[in-house]
Length: 207
Image 1: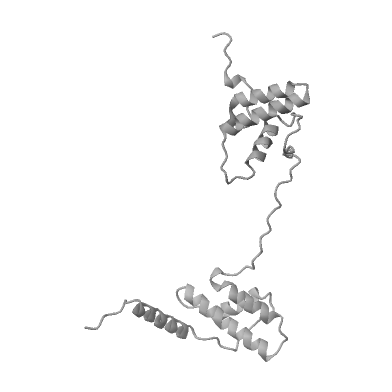
Image 2 (image 1 turned 90 degrees about the vertical axis):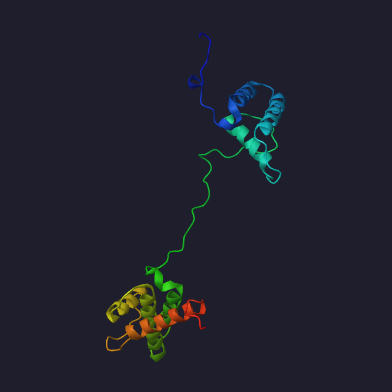
């Protein structure tokens, strides 16, 4: 058993896909004093790497990746005249820019973006009858959307409160103004649902 060397006692290899032999070849190339000879040795090592990890014809940057892996496995200690520059070290590479996401306003998901667009349009309108009429229309739309996606009834004060919240306190509907009744909305909802089932063939067929 003397003279045997186990992998557990050897240094870790950087890229396991190439195996320990390639890493040993790179370690040997680093010790070559003549730069021209080191470069020739590096080309030979990349040829071996190319056979171990063949790239697809569609991968136009495959050759550059091989040389990049060569530098990485040498811990950037291989001074050669390669066809590609060494890749940046991890501590030098800032990585991709952080993605910025559009911050959506806090709103129940069933209201949709159309409601938000209408609210934004109403907010920039001058105060007056036209803005009040649009606020009223939006409030009724909120109520219809609420009852479409939620079972049961909804109180008008809740709809007014959600309109104020979604508009940042800019839009409001006076308490004395009645919104469309819940029964009318639910009746229209049932009628639409029945028509849809009939058109899909869900109704009784006439003999």
